[in-house]
Every structure is written in C-alpha cells, then in structure tokens.
Image (cartoon, rainbow, N blue to C red; front, side, top):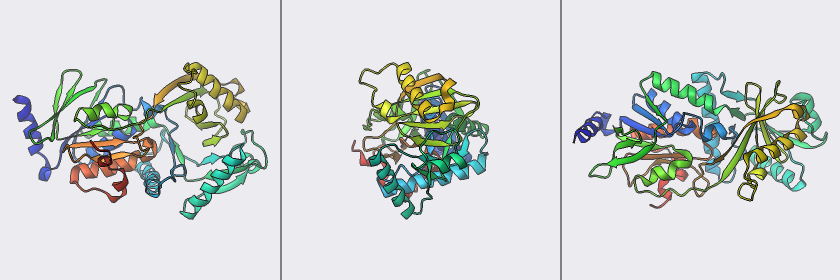
Length: 385
C-alpha cells in the first residue's frame, strides 16, 4: 500500500495530468536524448541501464549521421534529414567537442552494378534537395583523402553535410547534463517488472536490485532488449535478429578524416588514434561458421589495408558482435502505445542519426500529449498486440 500511495502522489504532481516522473529504460543514444530533453523541460527523470550508459550498441555501431542511405520511404528520409539538422542544433547547444565530427561522407564501388545503383540514388537525392558532389578518385586523393588507394577515374560521391558521431561520448555528455539538472542515473541494474494500475496505466518499475520506483510513464529505449521490456506490459514488439561485427584498430596518426563506404568495407576515424571498421559482407558470415570475433576482425583488417595502405602496421584492439535494434519492418517504433497509458517506445536501428530529433519529439509527446505528424508512419500501434 505504501508503494501505491507514492505512485498516486507522483501522478497527481503532474501538470494538468501529464507525466512528471519518467523512467527511461536503456541509456544508449536514444534513451539519453529522450532523458536529456525531458529533464531540461522539468520532468523528474530516472535513467535505468543494465550496463553502463552508452557502452552497448551505441558504442558498437558505425555511428554515421546521414539520410543518403534512407531513401526507401520518403517519410523516413525526411525524418533522417530532420535528425541531421537536430544534430547540428545539439552541437550548438551542448558543444561539439569530442563527439561531433562533421566533414562529409565518401562512397565509391568496384562493381559496375553497385556503382550504377549509388549514382542513381545520388540523382534521386539531388532531386530532393540533398547535397551531393561527384568527383573522381584522383580528385579525392588530391583534395580530401591522400591516403586512399583508389583508381584515378573511379566515380566518388561526397555527401558534404553528413558526419560521424562518437556515440559513447555524446551519451556521456547528455547524461551528465541531465543528472546536473536533477535526473537520477541507475546503471548496472535491470528492469524486472512494470506495474500498472486498475485502469491499465503505468504506475511503477521494479528493478533487479529490489527497488520499486513509482513513475507516471516509462520509455522503452532498451535497444536489442526492447522486446523483453515490451513483454512486461503484455505487448509483443517484433524485432529482426540481425548481428553486426564492429572492429576498432589502433593507428597513429589516423590516416583518414571522414566516414566512408569503400568497396567491401566501411571505415571512419574514432578519435584518439583509433579507427572503426564494419562490413555488411562480413556481417553475413555470422551464423555460417565464422563465429570467432577474432577471425571476423582479421577479415575486416585485411580489407581496410587494401583501401588504406598506411594501415599496414595497425593492429586490432577490440571487436564485438552486437545485435541491431531493428523493428520487424525496418522502421523505428516511436511514441505512445494506446493500449498501455504511460508506456512509450523509442526503438530504432538509425539511433545515431535519429537520436536528437526523436528525443525532442518524444519528450514533447510525453509532456504535452501532442503527436508530431513526422512520426505518423512510425507509431508503435502499427504492430498489433
């Protein structure tokens, strides 16, 4: 009964009945962005993470801020363009140092079919007003990336407005500011239960350390663990099970200056004498016998040395296979679930690009009840309970 009275008091403290104490479950980039926006607007926020903030999937993604790879649906492209703009606004608000790295993105291919496809996509993007520049390999080496080994006449696309983000540092900055304005951080503890009242609305969150928190709302931003959290409110959130391997290598100095998609390998700097490597081709080997992360890292390392010969003496330092938080249809699941008042979702594969814009929009929805039209195609209710 004591818990019930605490919960009722918390709900009654909300302005005009809107949630005032919100538990954000999962403190990757999406959870951190939601929590930061809620906290700076006066909500009481509890950030809950089973590990350490920003050290899950956020720290093991390619962390590429873009909309050029999001043309499958115009509304999704538009949302990602808004995400890019929100990143620039966030950098101006909290400061860009250590986490925000604009400078563009390069793409080229060694296969005629792949080359034709990305040039066709570039034409579509340009027709939508997206900035794209076409160069040759020789021009790119002369003006931008002298360390690259690529043919002189190969077409290379530069998307100058794209960027990469150091996700763990961004999360750390946002969490630090949220805590400074009154948010509470509970890391290293799992959510074991979500309690509801007689009307079916969220009333409490039970943690693995035995604590029961009285709350008015919860945000499921648990990434790959989001389906388990959804089950706690008797909801089925269908997710793809897609593993990806990311490797970090040491190199001093770092020979490249921006993110890029080279043939068979994706490459970007990572700050502090480090680079990040990823490849969808090598991801496809997971589950076919090439299960040892060290072997996967070796394949990535061999590929990058073909593109950047200066990395001949670099060494692999860390590798992880992580599952991407991708809802079943490939698009984000963001917003309220009408069947469970006070329960919200923030689950998306494009968390790095979309984090700042989804954090702002979802915080506004939680506090005001207003649903932004840009999220219409990405509402959780499209997945039937």
